[in-house]
Length: 320
Image 1 (cartoon, rainbow, N blue to C red):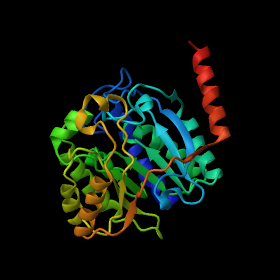
Image 2: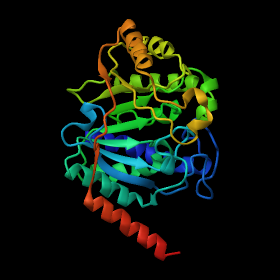
Image 3: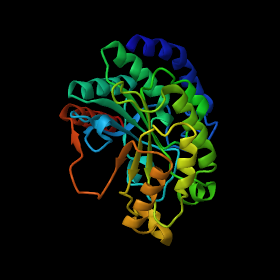
Image 4: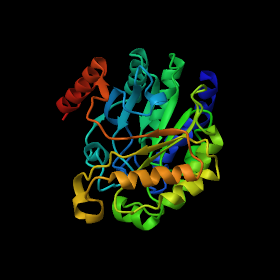
């Protein structure tokens, strides 16, 4: 399996780095030369991460007993007004590192018992990730690779990842482009996300826990009926009702959500139960739901990684 991934990486690595000269990695199609300035995502030509931890709050197969080896990449191609990670997704918080450092972090997470390598918002940093995977795979990285994405993806970019990504953990956020533009400054989300999910499913099929491979779809329930969830289930049912759904109730009106009265509150239990019933009507019975959101520690830092990031931050500061 590792050799197959390495062979595919050899074919696409140069292409991805070349893309940074006129970036079209995501559906924004900025065309920005990221060697000279940053794109819509706020990123240039080096890896930038907020943190890397063992995460125990992901879906059970992703976290397992050892936790998901989760890398929170800085930057994002969406601008959600309610984002709980606003600091590093939209405000530039994070540490710039080298590809070699990123590869080391992958391996450290595995050494500390990570069940999977969970890449959060990876696409804007895909060239760096692919190079880091080449290094880490050649040094013994074996855990499944999880592509943890908003669903707002360029299908042509996803095609390059066929036989590299083991698990796609994809959000479906909006069922109409009006809402995606209003709350996330993201045009054509629903049209694009459907094409992206179709490509993910083509590559890996529905998630199979025994094989640790496949597609899982996450749906964050939003308040105020700003999303028609029936559209999601109707679309997904054309692919397979065996796709596990992760129906999430933990929405909180963070940051600028207060400017929009219809989403400036928690989701009511009745709203959540209505979505559950819809999923069952369409034949979806596999997946996970939340009866209530409990306060709990869901992540554990890794001292070796924390020290590495602090050292890199100090080095960057001293070079100013």
